[in-house]
Image (cartoon, rainbow, N blue to C red):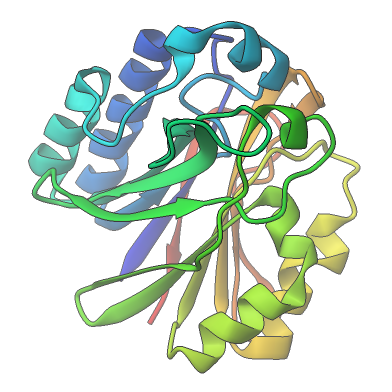
Length: 243
């Protein structure tokens, strides 16, 4: 199976524009054989927690009609897409007043929702804006079992440890990382090597509330070696073979 790791520069607060980009990347990656396409943290809105806090219309639902072009692209490409954004939780209002998680929605090759994962470990201002998740994210496709994690989650090795114990072969990491972030050397390859997982990273390019996205989307094999790297500048995707 091939998984596509993507990177692009989201337009801050413009869900429609970002959905168009995401749908285009799903189609392009599917045309090259990808069965799963992984995107960055908050790719639907841009990594803009303060803007999301102040703009309730940026909070999506699981069946949000604004995601229809992504569902259509998944059906056309025969690929699943892991898209991340602020998605309404089941609670009318969480303990900090939030109604949204930093959520990965896995849209299947038939356009249906395969899985939802809410980021468990919130970082900095995120804790003032979002509700943390309480459950691990899993889905299976073509006999391969996948785990979901989001950016700061990956600093906590127990997530990858649980994924391996749960017979997952592939660990999908939707993140927002600058080029000098030590996760490229100290986190992702370590999780892969320590737990025998393929680790696939979707990252961003361009400015955001946290800094400047450094690209480098790609994957590490179970031995911790890099098996795919999209580079630091060019938007698009890179394929990684997993099994």
